[in-house]
Image 1: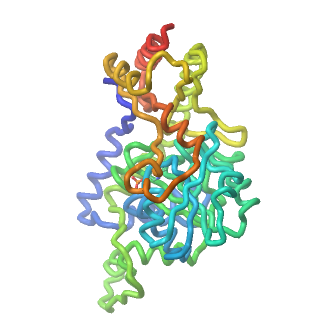
Image 2: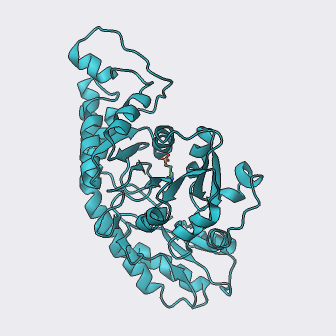
Image 3: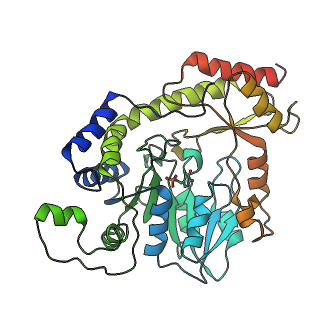
Length: 373
Ligand SMILES: *Cc1c(COP(=O)(O)O)cnc(C)c1O
């Protein structure tokens, strides 16, 4: 089977993780600090705070933003469900907004339609690595806290700079379904030094002195617990792998963009098929290469996924819509036509660093056969 995604690992990642194990210090320590600095520098953000996942980094962002019961946070329904769940973690209410079907992302207009006097924040997702137009949203909704869910977007650019470079807060994922992976892992980047310092404490039980600092200083002074914190730490083994992966990120983006361009060209002959593309203002990393089927496609999406599997191609349904899941369905009704169209009619095709052109030809041939070409 040709997989949808496969991480690009080599002997360097193995050696890096092995060195950490040999050192005897495997929990959050010097490697995490080094990875935080390197990743923040890559993004162009002043501070990076590693976390156990993007989900936990987003949770920290909402705690830092002071969000809680009675507050509404606008999120796209078209996202992995964690984007909505983190709003519930702080006791606030997620309110789903629709998306631009061309990008899969929120716009100033769709946010406007979801606003109420209780709206305090927006989580803007760079879905599938396609940069969202955050300047447009900020210009129209400057009073709201704008948190960027950049889970998929390491290596994507917005107006010539890395996505998230100017974000008050952006959260990143290093899950294997994304480009840069540490197995599990995440990061919060921010330009705000106070938020960064508090996030560092919160992710480590809100200890006044981190375990790594206490160890390296040899101090026996007791730490204080300044508030109720969490255990959202990354390990040094993960960070060591992350440092190697970060060095490979530019090559990953280049390869994915080349394969995506090849898909776009070869699939152009399928009548009515829509393929994900760069928006005018930025370049995506093609974390997910989705296509949307026209209404008159000869097969349903479900039948197409089965047909592709029969030809050795493991495709996936398109990006989910949280408001259609049992966990959120009773919150509605919601009027999200673009979200419902895209989630129902799209599928994600295989795209990974080491994918060969022959494998890609197999995917395209299977889609052409399904289309009756
Ligand atoms: C993957 C993903 C997440 C969750 O990331 P984890 O690191 O697995 O917690 C959140 N938001 C979006 C948009 C994602 O794609």
